[in-house]
Image (tube, rainbow, N blue to C red; front, top):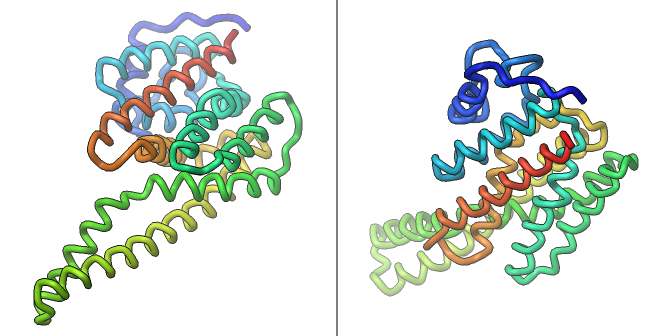
Length: 264
């Protein structure tokens, strides 16, 4: 494939576009300076990962990603999605699952499908959905802000109990019971609803290698959930921002590697 030259200012435009967020745009020109606009799914994922890193590192990473995209003439093939999941996303989520006491098999099941697709094998939408539902349920369950939700529910229940003359001891017992019951139910509902909706959308996109369907599945939110799931697998809320940045960095580096392999 012929390598295209980057127009003056194209790299800066690309970095600025990512800094604006998943749906940001800079003018009407290509962020590569020549040829078509970058794939919308890639811009969404890249913007989410850009925002999750420290600014200096994010800028350097965006320039590296831009160089890989330029090597593809701005047209990033869908196989990059599969390569990224096989080499980066699935292994990271599997490791997080094991650290949380699971066997990681749900994440490995998704990785195997991406591996088959990367090898050129046709994987049906039904197969994708069957593997994605349990894997995403696990991801969204860990991504849920359980500690914050539990604290809010406990505070509200305690205030209610005190307003109704429960007394401090009974109020504390009521608050603990209510918070656990309420937060567990909300976390399950959050995980089940998001997993079902996203599994269907991603299954359709993966089965048909449809970049427009992938862009419509809000991949920036999916990337954010994966990073949160990894960050929360290593402990409580203390230190979570740093773990989240580390997860974004690993996902970002893996994405740039996959784009680079697509250009090689």
